[in-house]
Amino acid sequence: MRIIFMGNPEFAAPSLQSISESSHEIIAVVSNPPKRIGRGNKIIETAVGITANAMEIPLLQPPKLNEKHFFQYIWSMRPDIFVIVAYKILPDKLLSIPKYGAINLHPSLLPKYRGAAPIQWSLINGNSKTAVTTISLSEKIDSGKILLQEAVDINDDDNYGTLSNRLSKIGADLIVKTLNGIEEGNLKGTSQDESKVTLAPKIKSDDYKIDWTKTAEQIHNLIRAFSPSPGAFTTFNSKRLKIYSSSISDNISEKIKCGEIVICSKNQLVIQTSKGLLEIGEVQIEGKRRMEIEEFLRGTKLQTKMMLGD
Image (tube, rainbow, N blue to C red):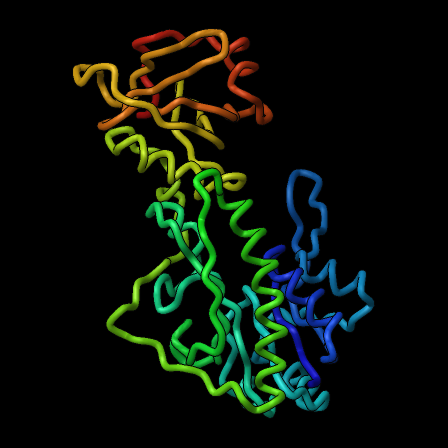
């Protein structure tokens, strides 16, 4: 089939690569325009844009999808299908072009976790399983018919980075299987059970702020969900302290305040929560680079009974 691929982040790149190695033909890639980032105002392409350029596939980067010239160009290419992985919502007019419509890869056990951040919310909620799911595109976000779905275990040591990477590779294979099934005419899809829908809304800055009155398990899961980026954070001496890894242990005393440092040695920092203790691993204090806890403690005047958080 003649495919136009649409996507932006690193999560989508394996799918692009996998389709290119299949019997299907990618006739163009659509991704966001490059952005200027950082103090140097450096121009940065999306991960999908970089991959498309490296593979010498025509790359389209329209500022707006409803532009007349963009629509006419896509129409003139006569695509059989759109494949969408982590991209924006498409106008109905654009969706009417491909013979087989559009399919989307979603990293959750749909109908669970519809929305922008399914991987993060799976980790925040401490789930032991997730999935990658291909669906036909519909008007309501992530509500299309399920074409194929593959369950994936969430390991105890998974964070957003490791889980996203694993799901992207499994999803890349699932995309090709889905395209094969559509081309062969034996993949009709199954409607989602609306009674089982849960949502995974877009992440806000308050979502990755640590609340020490929660349990050690809840905070540990929050840290996993936002590592390696943007990093769950607390505060110390009015500075933001990002925490990228942690482990859980039992309470020492119920009389200790939530957020209080209960152990502080050359290589160990342990914080009280509402239930259980949280031992801190890799961190980054505002204005400094990321470092392991031993290095951080060498350069920071911390001691027991000090408090983290506002």
